[in-house]
Image (cartoon, rainbow, N blue to C red; front, side, top):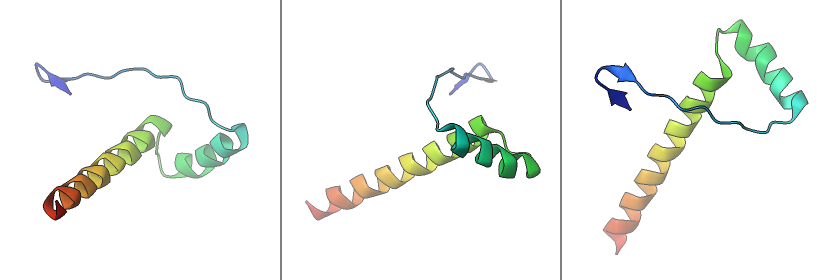
Length: 61
């Protein structure tokens, strides 16, 4: 969300398996990807997919 030209963020605690987190960091750091950036992208993709599914369901009914 943008508020007066500023990006508004929120902090959340998440639980991850340590080995998964470490392996992700190993590969992501090589590409300059931060965990929060990757999670934001994944969440946005999920939201868009869900919106598309809702639209298809609306058109069918």
